[in-house]
Image 1 (spheres, chains in turn brown, orange):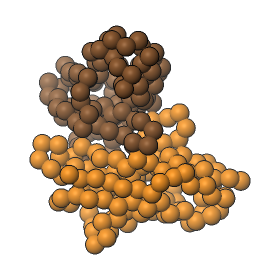
Image 2: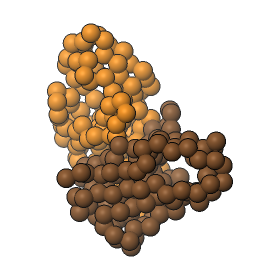
Image 3: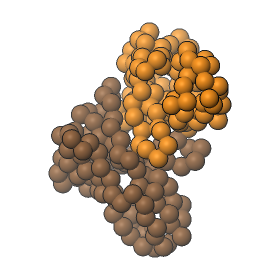
Image 4: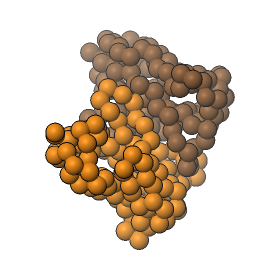
Length: 113
Length: 115
């Protein structure tokens, strides 16, 4: 199993550009989520999905869109990048939310200039 | 809302020293509690968890006990190694309505262990 994979590993964008961060898992997990990690802030939940076709907002959803057309994939879209979106982004998945372990991808380091 | 507070870092210890990283939480209901570890340049990995009061989670020599009376889940290890150098995150699972089960993280504590 590859686990949770994320691409790209690094990305530099100019303000106003758009892009999609890719996330895929091969563990048949129903629950997937996106977090951003900023210095001194821990991880904050952006969006999550409890299954294909179902998504919902987390703590910091503004400026990001998600969709879940398949169980395996959960892309995160930045519509118009802003410097405040400079961060490290992690995707995670689990069989379900709650008591179960979440498996994290290696992260995408995004810089917006 | 629910929240997690953990001790500020960085924490620097000598090899074989005793480690405690404090974590307290605020939650309605009965959340599950977790410690995740992040090694340099990597994503987070689950270190241990506890799902109800008085449960003790343990893994790789690390332990933490779910204390409902003090709303705490402190991480301990009796003898740290250089390989334990990492950032440690305390987390709880949301208990409220539609966001039930989502994780709320503390800000992380960076541990450096010197030989």
